[in-house]
Length: 437
Ligand code: LLP
Image (cartoon, rainbow, N blue to C red; front, top):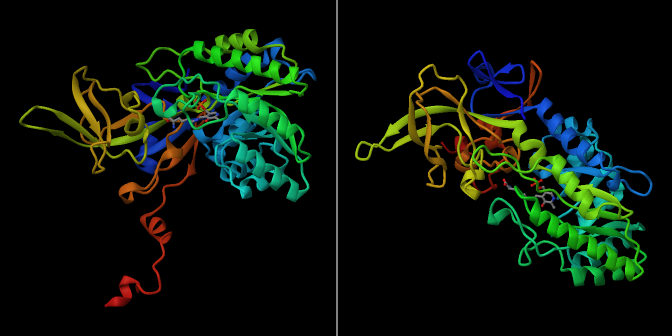
């Protein structure tokens, strides 16, 4: 469920009319709904928090560490922090943003296959909840960094469970050939190594098998393997206090099979790995923010190829603003912002202005007949949208807006062309152009 609905024939974000917003700030832009962010966080958390089998021995509910990579705007992070969210982070920048948004360090997880020494040191000094260690060289560097700071590093070992899943090959992470984590055998050896290292505190194991997963079966398979490894570690005399089961639950992108609801996921988790006498962590990203955001764009014109009749709906947003279709052939529902009175439909290729064929949002999509100047909404764009945008073709990053009921605020302004260019610096041997004359 989300809060983007038609009222009086016009698409709204909660109580805000999107055509009005477009008039005020120009297109393209991202807009997020606070109510949807909050609702998704609550639905997911309550499902897991409600499972007795997922309480820790101390009675702690699972840590829900929102995967900041999905949408790390400070206002989004703070909205979720106020709901009790922790953060799953993958860089010093994300840790800094999470802290800035009011997420306490003891609710922050730091994952990633290539953490630098500087990033590890930064994380340790904050008092972070845990580092998810993904390899032997990383474990050894972490020991060194912690030792030099006189700190003990709280860590879990990321296991690659050999079960991959996800909406696209590029977002599957748990396959045996994927770069993430170590094999189960290596995890057990590394765990023992860490347990005998005074700079390291191995607390448990972690996995994350992919993203946009629409089927509980591979997750269940991976989780039951994780349970086996927890038992194996304990049988070897090692203490295991934490189990991090990653994120990955998919969302409906309109044309795809309905992913399982969080309640079914929570039940499966409780049945598969409940009552293990440890604290659980989950790292949902997409599930929280994807359907809490949309991208609004304007139709520049419609180019109909005379020879074939093929119609290109050329919009002012492009692959640099929303990369998912270009990168993963992702499907985003495209809706008119003002519901057309005319029921007529046409088949379009929806494209942006960038000089690449990849800059195609969809091919052969049947949509209401559009005209130049019409506004269109790219739905389900709140996760992996703005965060992945770039300035290819010297197109400034598009703004982000957060709505709460009938209030709205620009939470990242559109930079001017001057601001964009002022970030670049001429070397002293190239005189500023204006001085040359
Ligand atoms: N935890 C770890 C360790 C991850 O690598 C990821 C996502 C998550 C949690 C959150 O997964 P989620 O709940 O959002 O599925 N850019 C791609 C998605 C990349 C996901 C990478 N890892 C896309 O636009 O589909």
